[in-house]
Amino acid sequence: MSKQSTQLFHYIIRMNKEDSAFFYFQLEANDGICFYSTLEHPHHAQYRDIELKGDILLREEMKHILNECAKKFKLDILVDETIADKKGSL
Image (cartoon, rainbow, N blue to C red; front, side, top):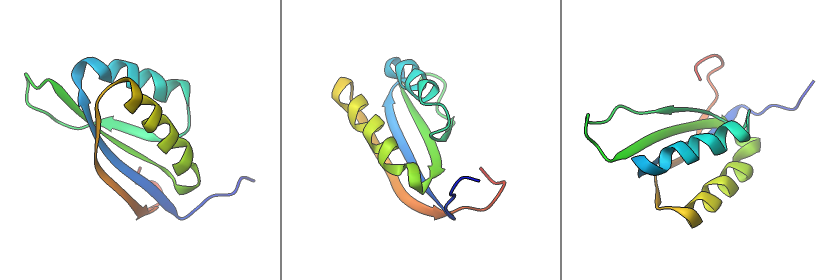
């Protein structure tokens, strides 16, 4: 049985629409690091806000992905917090 935490990391990040496909590819390549979803945005918006949630034990790995992506394109972290894991609510 794997070790699990009762806390989650929670990020909301913003990036240019044109960079979002590469970012989603990175998340897919790092399967299991987090759950993610694109937040609603105006129809013609040139940005994407993406919500990321994952086990706090994987926070450093997620930070590494964010830092490496930030070297390639502009990425703003709008929310960076720790939240309680409400089982089944991800």
